[in-house]
Image (cartoon, rainbow, N blue to C red; front, side, top):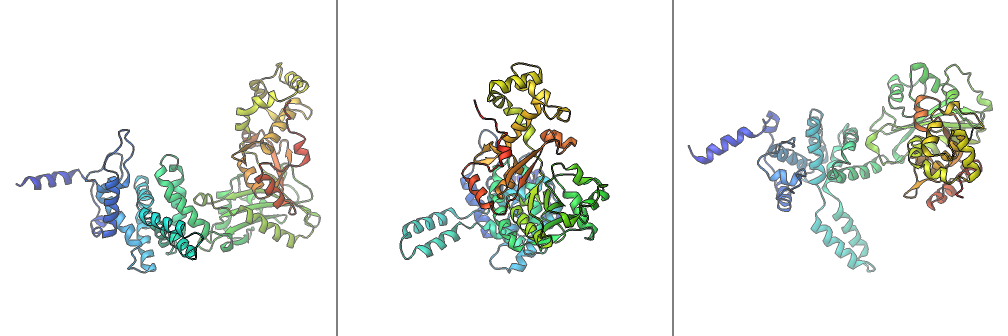
Length: 500
């Protein structure tokens, strides 16, 4: 027996079993071979710190490692199939059919095998660096000349990665966009641990921003008469105040309520985002009355205020694609047409990050009090001078605090600071505040015991906040925020702790 035959036979025993479908895959085309060789030349060794091998190295290898899901042989076959999707010799329809075949494989793949597909799409479909560099040099040289426009176009084309064409081909078949949105959602938890996936994630975000532009979305009212399958989606995706029963959801869709969602033609049965609205005669300060199934219906002829009490995104895969601003504006316009007496448009919002933030920042806030305020707070918590631990212990049962309690007043002042002054990278710390203030709203009013549920107490000691959408001042508020100043009402500003 020839040594080479013996080696081949025994090495083959070490390789993972290949399915019938994999055996039928054709050999690598020239494009895939080029991608493999160029990557392998760049990375022939693995760092001593045992970082995961890139797909460039794995594609060139003969054997896989124990922490790698797909063998090099199978990885090469899948890469070839991905390249076949964007083969310039096939039509868009045929490319979409080939993409659908990969989606079918993906549906039955393990999480580890799916991750390898993400890595291939992220690492193997990059723009040609030599072409990009050459186009960049030509563009820089053409600036200010009659050739500038053409050079810019050539540069833009050179920077477009083949990855974008792969995604476009997936969007061709009927379920392709939904497949990509779900794929990106599944990929999100892995991004922090594996930066190699960032290229694919950012590319998908860019594509989704185009495909899900608000100009392509349909605003629809969701009512009790809507299909049961759609109402079930509300129950499934409600992210602010959990829907506990069919009676609960019926109450939220009753005659004095409205619910609207944005829908995309390729995802017709699922609202991408939806908002729940209560029509009342004054600004609401607590969520319990709004969710009370036994409460009498509001008199719509007297309604002057629309309270947006829940806004929920349904698609994690559309992270970074913003349409909440447009949703609220469209809903306001729709409500004004139906109810001309409406004058006030405000939210009743949770403050989800407050309790965790306060535990880390309460010390400097206490130190910023003047001596009289420190004395009153110390007496209230039973320790003079008061410390962070003493205050946090005293405020741990907020619903027992009286209106004149120094502890209660301090908690409100801390919340005012959190919402009206705390910034990170020029943006509000609280995620809900960041959303509404970014839309042009202002911090209008803090509400004690606004949400006395376990969730409300855990997040913000039961506090809730009204963000006011003053339609005449939205742009002004945005400018303020861009300058690093959070727009707040005078009532909230009066609660600020002013350093001594």
